Length: 171
Image (tube, rainbow, N blue to C red):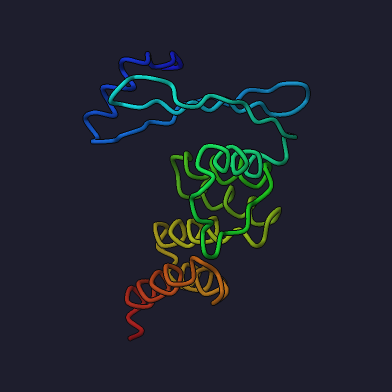
């Protein structure tokens, strides 16, 4: 379960997926912060094209990953309208909500994530889905409609709100 994949296995998976390059790596705690190791492996040769490490504070996980991605693909375009990045604590509650097995726990954890990072629209969308799964379509609709129109996830939120209204038979 926690054993790293061999380079041969990574190359074989890349071949099966039709990839030209596979990016692997790891995240570790180091010096009261994070150390992210990134490797780009060319599938046709098995050669490691790039290998480097990015370091950053614990609460800057996303920025540290973004710096590593920029080093790996410096010519790649920036996303047109990136989502605001939540704090590490908000992201932890979000992931725990994704992994939770019952809907009540999901709702609690997504709410805790949003209490820390109210702009975290992805957590808001998952909270809306959890309310729908619990059969509370009014809450599902209202939570989805709280995603601001300028958010990169606004279209998904409006769709989710519409699905909730259909369940409420409010056409």
